[in-house]
Image (cartoon, rainbow, N blue to C red; front, side, top):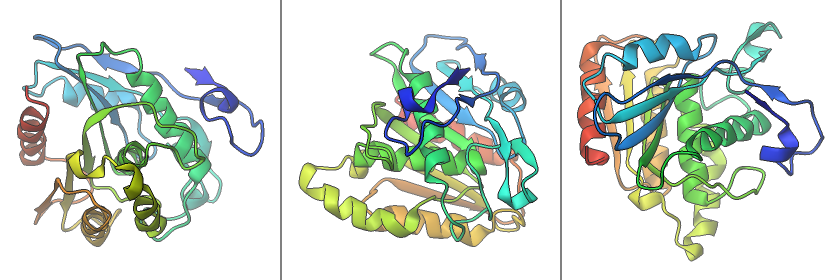
Length: 252
């Protein structure tokens, strides 16, 4: 999947070359199709690995779309290329934000959701850097626009972030306050964050701080789940939590 930055993320400073997204894997619903979730993998991973796990979940009414991020030079790896939704120097909210990369990936998520039937509920979730991209999509939805000012088109009903962090958290509060006059949808968008207390890749404190930041910015339906012995991976207990939460919030 490839599209030029100018067509989907117009308003970006330069007419840069097209971003090449990797292969998208789709898990079809086994029952009646009620919801579609775009699920985003972590740094260096691909859509295939998550599609295999998601296919095993007891959620027969969900269609899962698992795209693969573009391969790009990563500052964290000294410029060595890896699959990544955006460039990153630090897997936390402390590093600089690659707004152009975040906007392009959030636009790709919206594009993948754009052809779903109008009566289907839409959601986005992810792990690690994928969780960061999902949370960034949540803020774009609530602000009604991407970081570059273009309108955000997808109508999200739920957002899930596992072992991740909230990009652009330092500037979000002021942006949300600016939006309050135009009735931001932040309050009603449910967000589930899960994080392991012994995560040595994206530290637990960044997950906790992200949940606090979302609440302080007007997100009223934020659930934060912590796991005492969990590192930077997922476990059945956590995925059971995700299943129960999605079933509840999406009315499955």
